[in-house]
Image (cartoon, helix red, strand yellow):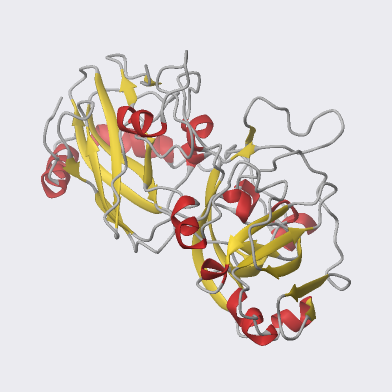
Length: 415
């Protein structure tokens, strides 16, 4: 197993030399087999013309997460995990974006022409907005991840979709919440907001005013189109970097208050100090290798591009490191593209596998200096649950290890 990073130029030179050494007959035979053409052609349909359709050879799909069926026998959706193992780049397609709900939910079927958002409570001027009025206000478009606090790994999980599939990353478009709060005029002492969505069991979350006035978004757009119903159509709150439960969907009401309200969603997330709440609700820093990852198989020895995702609720990803020997030594990975604040960032690492059993890990450092902990460090900090070695109580941003056996099979390496 190679213990140092493979030089890309050297790899390309070797590949070119190999290609140049092939006999013309072999190349011609291979090329002729590849140039026979498609087996069939797709005929145009109204469906394809109207919205498009992916290839029948692509079968990435979400899966139920957390041991509950989605939909269940009543038609309720619970947790649904995104297929990170198939991801490329950093954008999660809207149709594959994870979904989380604490109680199970029928998806509200909301007519945007009838939907209203109310801003009230400790404000000078209570306001009610239609969707058309919100869309007339100055908008912003930003890249952000959303992650459920239940996105945690254990030894029973076999794939990265099971260990980390409750996070996704999208391009969000909407209005800054601060714009509406400034228009309403927050009164002295209004240090929190309670955001409420349209659900059968009302979903609501309490957020400190410092966060609300900083970067919270009221989103009506996602990846260049209206927000999907499962993601909160026609309007959702986005609290960048905060755990998913604070990103209220189907948003209809924001109340400015002077104290922490223990709503259903807030139970178990009690942080009544508005100064420290922003740190207490943050996700990360976090990273995971998506290829190779659990359930995949390396076809043989040689060069591989190790690839994964990193993110942090504290800001931008500043550095990602990869280990091929279970954390004994670390090497810098390459950050692909631009690292945006509170957004998934793609990283890669060039690696030559010699066929020996090994363990791959990644760790992330964000731009405020936070370093992703090991499993042991996280367990020590959060305390272990008796009888469950390696279990992390609280938000789990610990390092995920993948074990590669000599036959190329990849497995979850959590003991």
